[in-house]
Image (cartoon, rainbow, N blue to C red; front, side):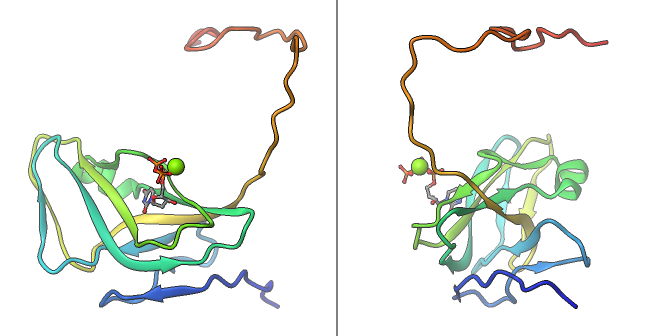
Amino acid sequence: MLPLLMQIPVINRSRHPLPEYQTAHAAGLDVRANLAEPVTLKPLQRALIPTGLFLEIPVGYEVQVRPRSGLAYKHGIGIVNSPGTIDADYRGELKVLLVNLSDQEFVVQDGERIAQLVVARHETVAWQPAAALTETQRGTGGYGSTGVQ
Ligand SMILES: O=c1ccn([C@H]2C[C@H](O)[C@@H](COP(=O)(O)OP(=O)(O)OP(=O)(O)O)O2)c(=O)[nH]1
Ligand SMILES: [Mg+2]
């Protein structure tokens, strides 16, 4: 018996199928570029790639736009603002900010699976101004404070 899956209203103005889980228990849904013509990324160049998708994410959830490791490993393609954050109140087109971190040109093709979308629950918090915080062993340590071995 499949668990009841969360329903997310979507408008698909692209020429491509909706994002899909590629395997039974994948965390992310691969999302495709919706391009009238290919986009060439020179080394260190970035581009905002449209998907043609418009989502209505339930309140209390976000969609994270994450890189695909295959594009990163084989071509040095990443996402500048990884993970991108799609807010529940956003009604614009979902876009992917790709960057080419390799020393070779990369051509993004129409319909190519360029990223993956992870739907995640998030808290919405209110700040509680405090005069002091509890002491911890880490304290103010960061940026490698625990060493490397
Ligand atoms: O990879 C991304 C990141 C964001 N967005 C859209 C959806 C998101 O809800 C909106 C705002 O994103 P973010 O809050 O990261 O950008 P900002 O620089 O804070 O812009 P704003 O002032 O509009 O919030 O932009 C995308 O389509 N793709
Ligand atoms: Mg913002």
